[in-house]
Every structure is written in structure tokens, then in C-alpha cells.
Amino acid sequence: MPDTPTAEQIEKHYSAAMDSVNLINALMAQDSRTTEDQDTVARNVEHLQLMVAKDYWTTENLAPFNNAITAGS
Image (cartoon, rainbow, N blue to C red; front, top):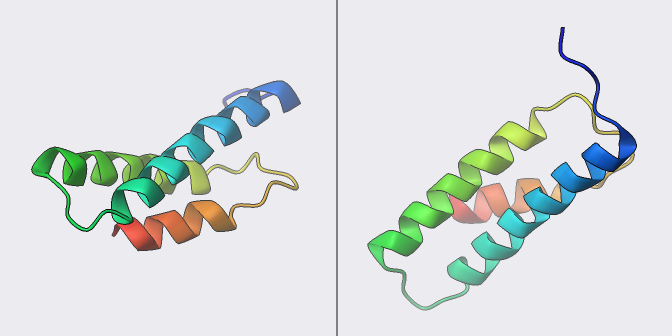
């Protein structure tokens, strides 16, 4: 069974996931996206889907993750 991450590690995971949220939101706000942009959105949506499924979250707000997944899908 994998070790439970420390609070500091969870904070880093959350921060990295928020980077994906911000990137998805920025790209989806553009009037048009290149193929590369679309690939970037898809990779970041996949990252967020993996992160939402983690069971180590405590009081973190995962709504931005879910909203970005919806926006990018």
C-alpha cells in the first residue's frame, strides 16, 4: 500500500493541479486553439482527473479541478 503523502506533499500536489486548472482556463478562454493547445488541454484534463481520484485530500477545495475538467472536456 502506498504511503500517505505528508501535508506538505499534498500542498504541492494541489498547487501543481491548480497550475493545470489555470492553464486549462486560460486556453479555453481563447477564441481559438491550435492543435498543440488542444493537446495541452487534454493532457491537463487527464492530470486533473487522476488528481481528483486521489484519496488523500482533506479540506482542499476540488471544485476548481472539476470545473476545469468540465471546461476542457
